Amino acid sequence: MTEGADTAITPDEAGSTAPPQSGSIGNRVAEIESVRDADIGKYFEQGLDRELLELERDSAGEQDNGLEEDTAEEDAGDGKPETAADGDAAGEAAEDEPEGQDWVRPDDPYAAAAWRELRGIPADPTDYDLAPEGQELTDAGRETLEAYAQIAHELDLPQATARQLAEFVAEQGQRQREAIATRDKADVEAGVSALRGEFGDDYTPNMELARAGMKALPEAFAKELRGARLGNGQGRKLINDPQFVGLLMEIGRLKKITPSDEMRLKEIESVRDRNIDEYRNKKLDQEALALNRKIAADKNAVDSDAPALSPAEEQEERELLELLEADVDKYNRQWRGTGKTGSERLLELQRAKAKGFS
Image (cartoon, rainbow, N blue to C red; front, top):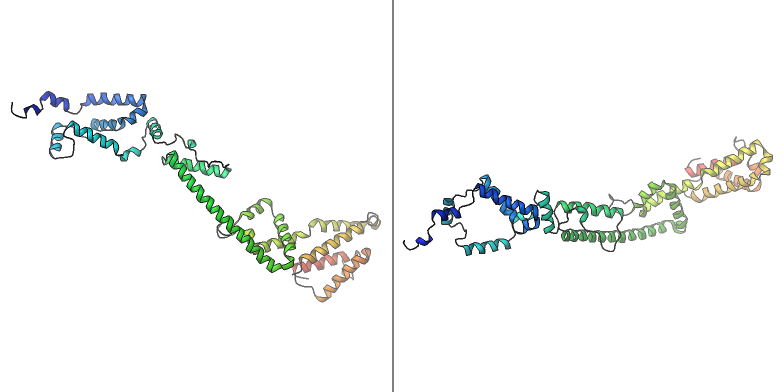
């Protein structure tokens, strides 16, 4: 034999180094699948998932395993190891470098479960632990975290990564809430200052009117108004706006004299017209006097900015108030050919004054 003949490949040796035939591929595939079904962790740890992929490609004819092509590729210097030692070194280097396919979740449910476990990804969205420590969540906060966990699971985020992002979002939200609270406080102070400057000594009674106006609104609607903000929900609170406070004051003025006061006064007047003795014996005249005083006082208190009556009407109003104090019976009789009692005429004048017409 010539020098170097000991390195020549014999036919038998060539057969042993050739890629496995279809039968041996099928056997190896069966072995790998058996390992996968028995121990999914071992399946991934030993890289059997990648080997199985290669075998399936070989079996499908996607890769040419001919010895002549392998020899040609080696001659062309394709970078494949030329010795066993080189092959071992290349294998170790490959294990050290992450492959792009490592973070692609397998389609098989069992393989996907093991894949997630190896990477610290919870098996189910509900398994994420994202709640802030030492804080009790509101219903809205709980719903937000549940939605976040669902997205984190769809994106295959590990527990540690998902929690870190959740904490970052929560921290930013807290900073935003603190900034809004600071701005709201400044808006309240500015609004109070503006209203005090406008109303002076009438500030306190006017604020009572505003609160009465808010209470007069339906509860659900009032609740929405308390939380409403200007500027598409990004500006100051509506209740901190002086113009809105003025609107509430007007509502409060309208509700100051309750319908029940006027209705009760009409009931008393009906008793008086029907049975004057009953009217006096039950002291309904005194109740009528008190109601008329209340209505007159409330009208005067809340309508200071209303247009004045004509001088003659103002004089008539004063005379009726004096008559109310001096003689209730006469006050409740016909008044100067108007076709109305003194009580009805005074109420008419005060309504006209309140509405800006006579």
